[in-house]
Image (cartoon, rainbow, N blue to C red; front, side):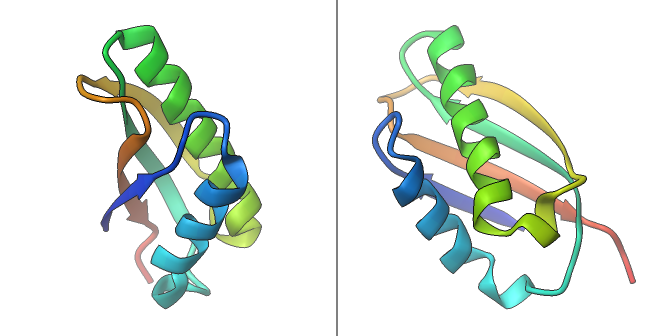
Length: 91
């Protein structure tokens, strides 16, 4: 599943709300791993933003993401957006 989250750096409440809304149809599933590409002009900032998003995953849906492996990546661009690739365990 691919999703996009847009929130200001540090606005973890908004991140969690968006993540809760965009993953609602997958409730009851368990994520195996998540690749998160944080946008920012500099690589370190983008990876830090991706880390904020990944921390927000566990706040938004603890049961879905509690044991998921996450990776923080950088994607050039304006700060405040992240693209996520979420891979669920198969049933």
